[in-house]
Image (cartoon, rainbow, N blue to C red; front, side):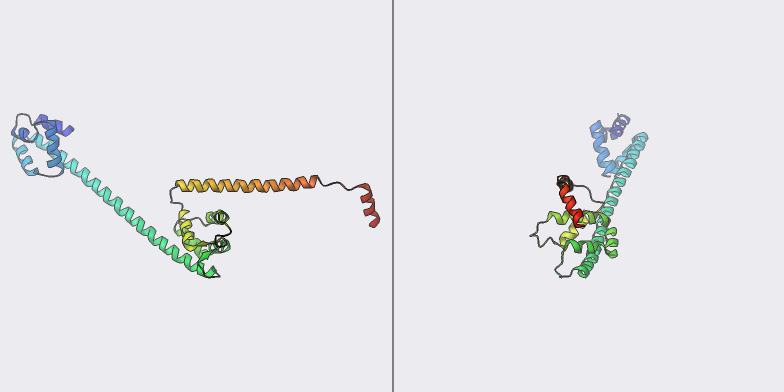
Length: 234
């Protein structure tokens, strides 16, 4: 807009002004087509050089700035696309490597060879140093998964194949616990359920302790006759 105003004023009374810079809108159109898209740039530049060198200097300043801006923007977009593609490819390779590594470890600890993981097998996998290293490779904290195991298997009912999960579900949960993942609504809902279940378990444990203490306090004391009888027996 600034260059359009300047070129309109500099080209007043000249043929190039009448053809290409007769108004601010016409100047903006010429700058867009000839300055940015390089359409008819030679003819416009030649006419300006013959009639108004100052207009030519302003015009080529815009061409330089405009094309450098477009070039830098395109380079930035291209670099971002390449970076994202490389990141996704690298992540896919790491996930495939970890999946294969954990599958081999599961074959070692899976006694019934059904590729389903019980809570005990879950812990055995996470106690394997190779599994811990593989999980670190994809940004997963093995200690956090151990704590999460109680929640996973406690949420299942007794009919769910005797509280076993498939290897595919295991990998899905593992990848969901990567530190680079962004929190989702599902994660917030799962956290709410986990906190609620933890509080309920704590309340239940406290209630059991209170009942045990209450039974101890309400136990009738030994009478004198019972004490003397105990003494005679001794």
